Image (tube, rainbow, N blue to C red; front, side, top):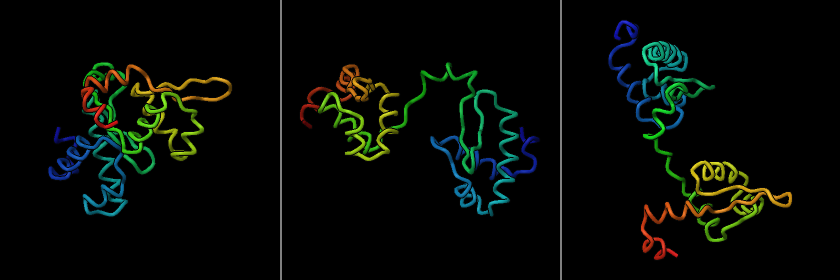
Length: 168
């Protein structure tokens, strides 16, 4: 393994391994410049070499680059094996607020949510929908966000009915 990383010292490899292992979001080139204490050109050269070697060794995970951001991804071929062990990232405070609002109304037009929470609410709705907390239905040329009964059952199982009712 070290022969593939022969141009990088062990400390640099260790730092990069650690950063990619713990990060659950894309990492900017600026972050690598700061951590490695190098300029942009040197950081890119180090990362390119590291990524080429890393991707040759590993089959189930890969490091990808998009613009000036780097991130660790699961190879499509092995994604089904990992799904059971994957956790969704936690909800942001705004997403929790949007979910609570939808829960209180049970059904809300998306345009009302946009007026209340701003246009970025659509990204929040997408995540809430992906996680199964809400459904989006189209009726009368309007889209509505609906709180799903399964989400309520899930929340009650996780938090307990008394704790939820105490907050209401």
